[in-house]
Structures are given as C-alpha cells and as structure tokens.
Length: 177
Image (cartoon, rainbow, N blue to C red):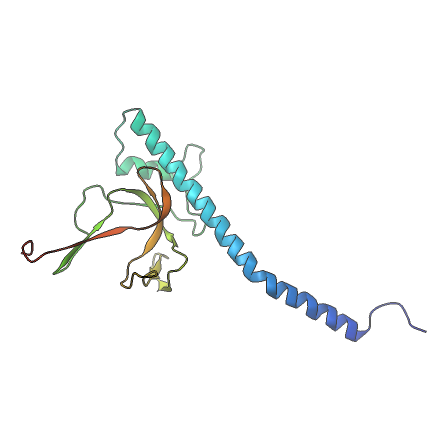
C-alpha cells in the first residue's frame, strides 16, 4: 500500500521540469523587458517632440538650453529619463560645427535630430564595452563597419527611430586644405 506524498524521484523530476520551463522562458522575458524599455523611451522622446512642436507653433524660440530645461524639469514634475539607464537624454549642439575633422572627411552631428538616447542602441549593434559615463561602446551595425553608433533618436519632424547621430562629409581633393 502506497503512502500519501511524492517520492524523491517524482519530486526531483518535478523540480527538473520547472527548471527547464524557466530556462526556456527567461530569454523571452529579457526580450520583452528590453522592448518595454524601448517603448517607454520612444514615448519620452515623442513627448519631447510634442513639447518642441507646440513651442514652435506658438512662435517661441526653442534653443538647446530650453530643451535641456524641459528634459530636467518635466511638466508633470518628473525628470524625463531613459528607462533603461535612468539618465537624461542627450541633445546636439545647434552650431553645426565639425565634431571631428580627418584628412579626407568631416564628421558632423546630424542637425535634424532634436535629441537622442545614448543608451538605446540598434539591436544589431555589437557592444564591446562601456564608457566611464555608462554609455555603450558600439562597433558598427550591419553594413556599417566603422565605429558609428546608431541610437534611438527623435527628429525635429517627429520621427522616432534608430538613426546615425553623425553625418560624414567626404572631402574631395579640391576642398582639402
């Protein structure tokens, strides 16, 4: 006659099945968590663009300082931060000055970008490490083979997508100094 309860063998099999199920579901959980974080980041960038577009429609001049103040003093009383890192979004300088000048190219920041999140990089990018401020070091994405990060950004026309923050201008021999 059998007593009530599980045998040791049945208990170990049940534990093993639970471990296998958790092991199979964990990657899906990580992907879902990163997608939710990206969706929140996109919503924050879109809120920034909505504020920027409203100010432009009212005829107010919006400069980099106003954008930074909006990011740090959100109308709801909360600071707008990236949900992944908890840090503020980056804005680009409005002066259009070269960021890096090489012998045959000039690297400028894209003037059409309103702000970008340096912690949300394109999913196909290879992260090789992290800078002291916590931003990832990216080594190219897809067909792009040089060190060119592709971040989640909002354009001044309202598009929120992964874009190249920098523009490369190739110098022709006639324009070289």
